[in-house]
Length: 618
Image (cartoon, rainbow, N blue to C red; front, side, top):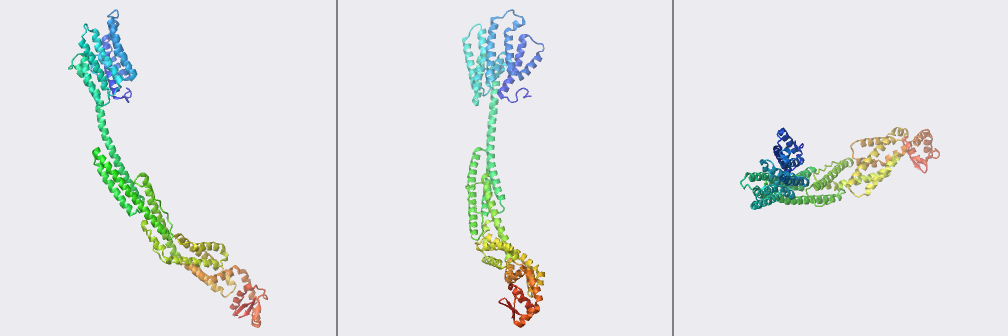
């Protein structure tokens, strides 16, 4: 409904003007009907006037006022009761047109206000209309010019009385002038926004009494002043209530801001607590103190009921917060220094860990909380990684050099020194160095004809490790390379063992022992024997393995030699027994195979030796 009437977004003053004009238009229509003797459809007309006044007040107010001025001045002529226009009628029309129509229209055009018509219509309607005389002036906060000009229609009363008076009484003229000036004074005071505005009632009351000449006790002086008081006081009251409410709202807002700030700090503290799996004890104590102090401050702020208390609690909170922030900053600084000290000490034992940079001044805030959490997470991560790496290394040590090593359990970085007990064990370091040295010798001396590329690559790794300074990485690399060596040896031994059928065919007496040893070594590699022990056993069998490798590498020629010797058995035995020696060239045999001829003869029961390319009786 308000939207239909155009009232959905108007001010209080505009609302008062619209309501006043609607009522005054209805009363003015009654006066116009009386002057023009229009009684038929009166109530219908009143209804139309009321509706149009609500919808189109800026149009209907000047139209009805002009119609009233016309009907008042020329009603007799319009109704045919007079034959001509009198001079008095013309004077009345001009006076009313200027003061009651033109001036209000000027106010409406300049200030978009109906103040002038509220004043003018209250002067000319039925007697009850006079009740609204002060309403147009009493609007709070109006433009001073608008208020002053809206008081001008009041001049109609004294001017009309002077013009219609048979004798001029200067005392009354003075009263009229003083009354009008008081009207202007009230208009000036009412235009103020502050509490001073209500003081405009005094000159209004006196001004109405003087202008009307009806005295101070007249209802025409009291009632308009009373209604004006209501119009002016409502905004003042609303402003006062709003001011009090706003004061409470501001107090509550400031109180909530402090409580929210404390709550945010508490949530940030909790974020630090939950952001790391194992907080340093120093930090836990500092955070607990911070949390307890903040909760105490929150309780104190909640109890405040006035600004004085709130300001004091705000000051305390800021002091406590600053002190606690300094404590947290000092604690984080100490944690980083202690952590870096541990890292520096571990470097002496070959453990390389990331050091942390000292951050700028820290405090519990949205920005710094991320820095603090990142520092703690970094410390936790590095501690976990290096501990896990050492424990994996211990597991590797058990597989490489044997023994049982207790795993390291570290809850926070302050226990990192435990790692030095493991890495500072000279016995462990010595055994690893010994294992590397044997590997280097084995890989250098062992022929491994069919795996030469892999052997060379692995040999380079081992030799490189031998010249490196001791570190956790070297230890882990030594474990890994030892496993690689065992894997390569396993492949190599299996390869040789798989040649046993071909070895049996060459009928050398030592082949059976060779094959037996290879099978035993192959079984040992499948058992849970430390890698270094396997390497040592392989190194102890170096000559045997190289001999087998040589045979396997030239298995075809040696097999052919075995067959040739079988066919020349009688010739060889005769020559050796009768002549004592037989040249290998006579047999068509390369001297490099001499040791196999000696071995073969030994298998037949003949002891022989090699002398200058000949096989001689031993």
